[in-house]
Length: 129
Image 1 (cartoon, rainbow, N blue to C red):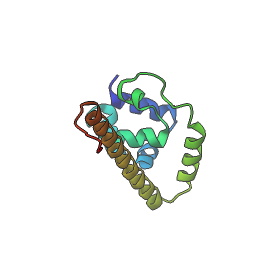
Image 2 (cartoon, rainbow, N blue to C red):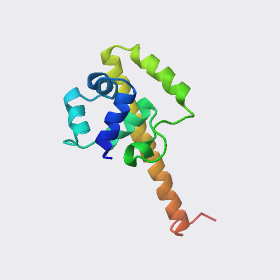
Image 3 (cartoon, helix red, strand yellow):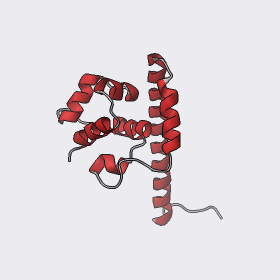
Image 4 (tube, rainbow, N blue to C red):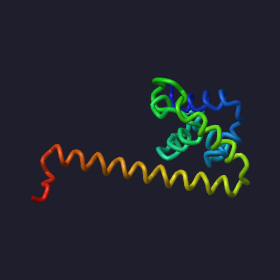
């Protein structure tokens, strides 16, 4: 199943309209329609925001494997959703932007850790004596 179909399945499962679903992740209804129908691609950033905002497994979102939702942070997701819904539109957009920044930082941090690990295992890094 294509990723757009999984996004639609998630949205339907959550009983959200395209406007509501897209609004919480910072994309317009028309763009979401394009994604769900397969006419538009999903950016890495949008994928990560969907997973973060809705507590969805990235593995499931990317290829349909495993469970749709994480089990551990369910309470956190519920609390975040409640808090997020209490914000006005401008603050919701700001929260989404800040979340995107955090996801980018996390990605860069993880990439840097992997790069450093590869250097250590490849013998390219020499510890000072």
